[in-house]
Length: 111
Length: 359
Length: 149
Image (tube, rainbow over all chains, first blue to last red):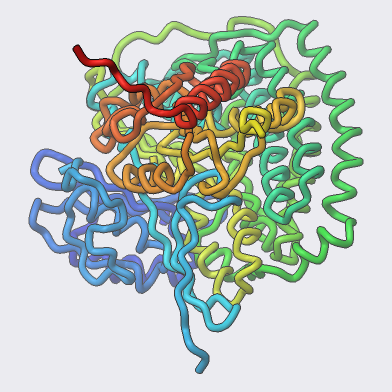
């Protein structure tokens, strides 16, 4: 990956890309969701030494996204947060808080 | 297999200045697993970008956390400045660097005090906080505020430090350094302190990498990475190396943070020697359009600010990944296998900032 | 025996940004030192007379705050420290903030500021001590009968 690059990929390509990145010795920096016109934009940031590079997914409002928490363990916090606040249905998070990470009254406020 | 019991820890707990809840699964006195539940401080301030314009949002960004308030404001400002391609005057960059390092000293001293409080060394707690008050006085002299200064703005800073003030600060830092040397002897050499910190809560270099830890927590496990090396503010002009330790236990984390305070004194001296004259802010016209990931080294580690703007005065998205959020998985790992009595110390040695984490 | 000679204090961080929390702690440490008024910071609600709350109330901590309050023995005084605890402050418009502490508890003393300055917090605590005495007296005095007719 090139430092500072944002690589846009399809939802189906996420797992192979992340496996490759993990193999290359990157760490997970963050996962960020943004609400866009027709759905969401998920940005996964990875770092090696002082570099940072990103993978970006454009997903529709009902799209299913696979969790990367079995590849990068710390991802579970970010993914649970995105499920809670944005309502993106991320599959197979471990552990899955099932919308109870932030116990907020208003459902998916960022949706 | 021994019987398992679950002990709730928090949200209100004597060692916790901030609320977090952990369910500790115990086998006798040994922790087998820790399950966190967070959200007691969740406000939802990232959503405020829809109500406050991007200039006003600086005030909200500063209130993500009151301990690293200055750096939150600065990280946000630098992200917007980079999107708008605003060149901040050099003097402003230097001033930001000086306040950043002062914040680091204040934050680390605060942490040393809380750590001493956690293992019940009351007078050490008081001494650390007494020393910290000197930094707060300097903040008050230079900015007007003690913990939240609102001195950052997009395009520069609001207040200047004249030569006289800097000189008096440097003299005070010399004094503080002497006092800190005496204080650090107790932290690093005292028998009782050592017995609580040494060989407790190991995190190996591999774990530190795999769990994505940042800051002193990571550097104490032997990874020499410091986001300041990326070269924001005036850091490219200053000479420093990341401070590390190879051991990875609670003692190593304390040691790294103490040495970082001395490093901060040094960085301020370097910056004060090189600070150029000139303006402290440039006028900013127009609205930002674009996105940027900005990384800043806070006292607790690397923080990531993501700003996405659409050419209007309201931003599309502002997200901050704070260091404690990244350090939580690593902390849960170190808790596995530790004694119940060591749990407070272990939680404190990552220097948790829950307010940052939950926003 | 007079409680006001040594009122014990319990601090809970609602959803504050930490700014007020560290100022509350700064009050308890050298330079400001409320211990000279006999005030001691305790971690146990059952020992506390004064309940200091920083930060606003959100959906998750409302029950925690109520529970801590109920565990405190009477008489007790609630002090809301900082503008967020007074009315929600800068976070008032956030989706997860209900408002100030008075949305769930009867607040006796409001200390404004962002962050509240130690001087202001000490002032609030001293007022709380006076109020504590008053409340105690009221509780000890026999109920006054009103003459009818």
